[in-house]
Length: 238
Image (tube, rainbow, N blue to C red; front, side):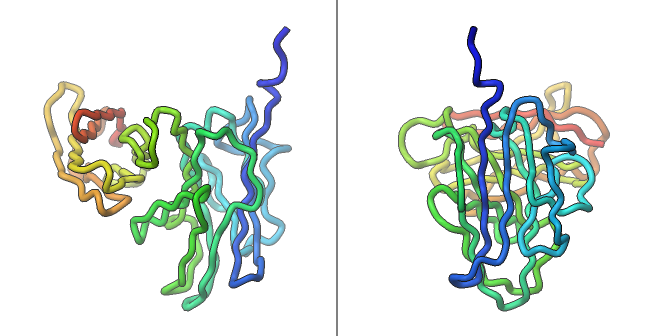
């Protein structure tokens, strides 16, 4: 009888520092049978809801700050989790991995949607000086990505792009873009295969969008193409 994998738990811990001083920490766990929503007994709200570093559930209510965010092991493959960072304007801070037990081919990125950056926390810390007071869970995200589809080398292939559309957004977000992709084009097709949107993306900016404004509700297909690499994903416009 094969036992073990279904009980396996992976984890990542993050800490926020001002200089050498640790200010806050938050943790992510992955175990079979859990969800992106609330899993009682696994997810744990932060005792201090104004803590300087916390996460939100990837699905469901965004009102509660979590100190422990637990998800299914499959969610390591391509999941984007809101991250709240609370800092005052002018404050320099860093975020680093404090504890980690993950498969080798899983990457952990910190996405800053305002600056359009995607920082690999396995390779180094995320550092920023706040230009204004920081709070809320709509700017920073932790992205877990399975890079087993990559060829050897450090460059990210097109299959590692994080493509998603929130229900409230009138655009598709494409995150994880790198200059190594060269020329990158995004095309949105309707269910009949007709092109409804087309855009050449700037590979110097890590996070970009493709508008869905004015489109009829329904199912669409977004296609990203870089050289001979092609990535497609279904998108729902509501």
